[in-house]
Length: 279
Image 1 (spheres, helix red, strand yellow):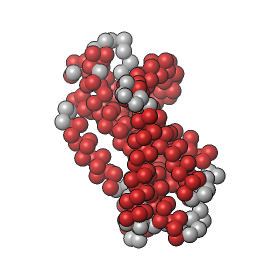
Image 2 (tube, helix red, strand yellow):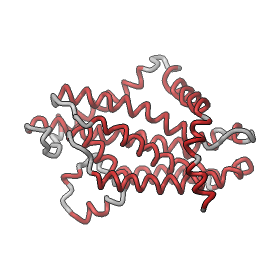
Image 3 (cartoon, helix red, strand yellow):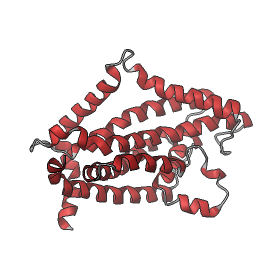
Image 4 (cartoon, one colour):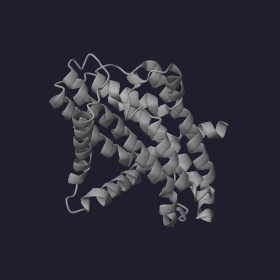
C-alpha cells in the first residue's frame, strides 16, 4: 500500500520529468491530425463550428426544444436557442473525454515498437493522448462563449471556474485511460467493448437532455452515480447558467476522479513490465 501511495505521490514529478517528450508527442498528434491536411488547422475550428450550426438548426429550428429556465434566459426565444447551446456545451467535454478513452485503449498496442525499448516510459502514452483532447475542447468551448455572447447577449461571470473543471476532467480521464490502455494489452477484444460502454455511458449522461427536466427523483439518484453527470452539469452552470457549480456535485466528481485515477494508474504501473512480452 505504501509503495502504491508513493507511486501516486510521484506522478506529478514524472510528468515534469518527461514534460519535453509529452509536449513533443502532443505536437506530433496535432500536426498529424490537422497540419498535414489540405486545409491545415482550419479543421480544428470547422468541426465544432459545424456541430454548433447543426445543433442550432435541428434543436431550435425544427424541434423547438427549450432549455431549462434560468436567470440568464429571460425570454422564450432565448430558451429555444439556448437548447442547442446546452447540448453543444455537453457534447464538447464529452467528445474530448470519449476520444481520450478510445485512443488510450489502443495506444500501447499502437506504440509496440517504443514499448519494446526498455528505456521508453510507457506511462506517458495515455497522458499525451488525454492532453491532446484538451486542444479540441478549448476550441469548442471558445466557440461556445462567442455563440453565447452573440445569441444570448451574455457571457457567464463564472468562466474562471473552467480551469478547475478541466483539471478534474483530465485527472478522471487519466485514471480510466490508464486502466483501459493496460487492460487492452491482456484482453485484445476489450477495444470492442469500450465502444459499447462509451455509447451507453453517453446516453446515461445529460447531454441531449437537461438535469432540470428529469422529473423522477429515483432517476436523478441513479444518474448521480455517473461521474460525467456531475461534470456536464457543472460545465453548463459555468458556461451557460451564469452560476457557480454546486459544491456537492464538484465534490462527488472529484472523489470519483481520485478513485479512478488511483486504481487506473496503479494497475498500469504494476502491469507495464509485462507489456513487451504481451505485444
